[in-house]
Length: 163
Image (tube, rainbow, N blue to C red):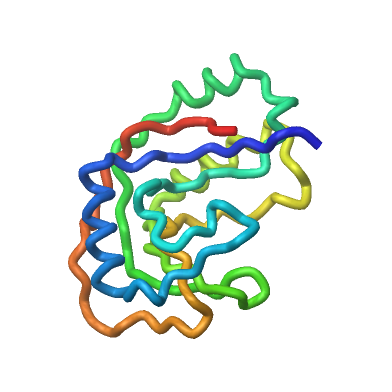
């Protein structure tokens, strides 16, 4: 099988840095989990803050002109954020610290679904649940209680296809 691609909304760097500060407030250095085999599972990942619309696209099958046209038609300037939460990762080996993305009108889900016209690895299909990964943490990590200060409106720099 060839390379896989994904479509992401890239968060502006100035705003992303506020999430680095947030993660450093709710996590100690020993809380972070790093995989020896999966490079993206790398502790605090706020330096690459993004919202994934779709992944597992078969890069060798992508019509670049069609993809560019689809990306150029998207007009997402900001996304709204909800609560922080933690989800158990693969086989309980780690947890994932995330922030919920609010999609009240379903427009983000519609964008994700619109990429179904492109070939995707059938084993990599998933139901779009808007969220942003902040960090991979140890399996015993517990999110501290409290109200955390972070931007609730997140400016989008661009939506891109990456392989």
